[in-house]
Length: 570
Image 1 (cartoon, rainbow, N blue to C red):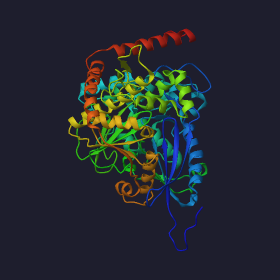
Image 2: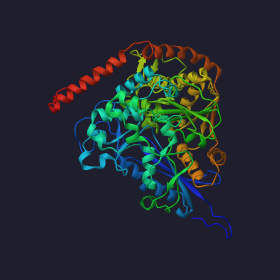
Image 3: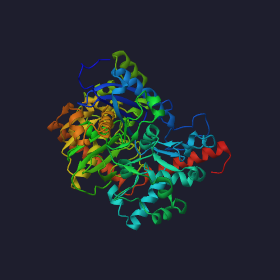
Image 4: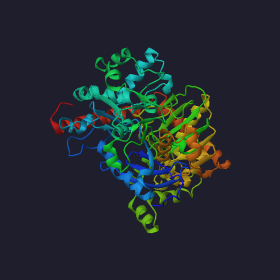
């Protein structure tokens, strides 16, 4: 640990903690220039619960995705002290901590913030657990919300591209009420995990403006009214007033200070600033120095979230939302996204690649993804003869329908794993272009694409995205961009900078790599994108219900299977 010269001002540091789908990561950042001093990652012990609750019990239905809240606390207990140790700094020099989270990830709690699943009487109840962002089992509730809002002409609906997602607060809350009314009655707060972890750090519950606006249908100072909620279900009438409504903190503000309990967990000084919670995607533009209108930031991991600032309010079909100050104060923050990206590539490698490929990858000293990428990079565009729809986890934007499913067209007996792998890479790029075209057509021009997240390490994928979109593309020069973004917000909350824009200019990361569209590749992808659009519209917009019918058949079969095992009526 270095000691500053006599009379010198000691350095100040902030910590950013990024909660992802499978792990939490902490990074220690120097306040004056954003230098990342050290980091640590903690994998969640329970990962994503999709089969059975911990300790056994009946199988979970299809499209469920739960998590265990104490896994989040363990990140504070482990990753934060380890990051401080790796940085070699004095914990006393840390002046603030900020966090970001996947969204919409919901925690049902008691009045003091205890998750229902930590109460003995609810340990065996699936609805008492955290519903991860990719919990899509509330699609029927989302469909009813959308139909009713359209029938009534609700003014807030266009702010969400005309459709509310099954991933969001209201659909998941309505599902909880209708499927486990006892747990719903016991729940006193319906809390975004982004706010729950700040509550754990400070002892104070503050809702953040980002998730309230994008995931909680909070627009122009109000939520959907009681008449609307009661029309969905009479028992849902007081959902906002009894379960959701709470003080809202603005991004970059301090939600409170570090409590004694949290200081013990983290090894930091009690009383330091704790920033208002935020979303992993929305903290990233400041980390990338990409807060100007026209700069779309895509955070690519298991899923992709696309965010950007705009000067004016526009209605973009299928967007996840537009919120005043949702990313940066004084600008309209836009969001869209894809529910499956890295998850799709991972699914294929796990389930669709023969052992011989893994053996060859091991012989060459690379991973299977790297091996497939190398083989796929040798192909000319269109050589594999395939086209895929990237809906293996449903469609978040622009169709907002998680009943849709993945599709690969063109397979023959000559199709190889690298062919399918490249087609899946290309499909996700086509999905991003579909989103960009919706923004451009709606008067929110996208001029540049900035990529953050783990997938930036795949140069083939990055070049495909540049060629498919026809946009200049750069990658963020930080391996922990969301954590850096949270650290930037922590610096503002601690009073080191006047606002997030100023902190971004001083602490944000420069570009690591730049990809320029290759004209002949752009032209080649035009033909494939036209075919993608035809498939996209046929299965997503034409009234063709085959994917929805397959989902219904799957649910019925699952219900019959559960009934046979439990003896309960189907």
